[in-house]
Length: 154
Image 1 (cartoon, rainbow, N blue to C red):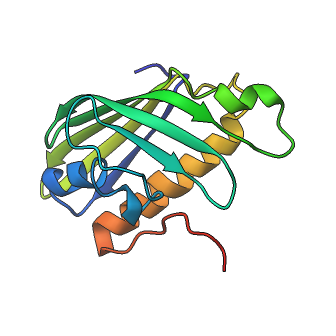
Image 2 (image 1 turned 180 degrees about the horizontal axis):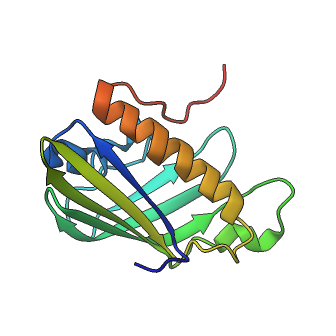
Image 3 (image 1 turned 135 degrees about the vertical axis):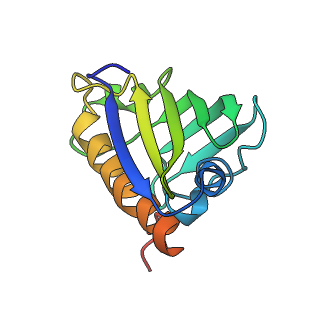
């Protein structure tokens, strides 16, 4: 792991199998609703954040049940007011790796977003987003069954 990539670790009261499901087929419970589940290597899922047009398409490149999930960003369109137009494609070519390890009755999950580094225009916004959705929402979902996924304001 690079010390420049966005990297965080959480410890949850869930099995490695449940944690693995959350970062493959359970994104809607803690992040946002994708158009498809990630079930096999090669699967692609588009993650949108309505009501805007921003999205990221992630492709599964390594799925090791209960221990590791790797996804490459193969399409990106990130709009964010106040940031330069280059932000639109900054995730393109990045890789998100989830490391899952059962330990003493709990599970540690580390996410490393390879290529999401402080020199990117979107880094602070994306860091805050991952901190909320991974550190807070995923942890809450795996500990209590209730996450805080993105939703369209009513």
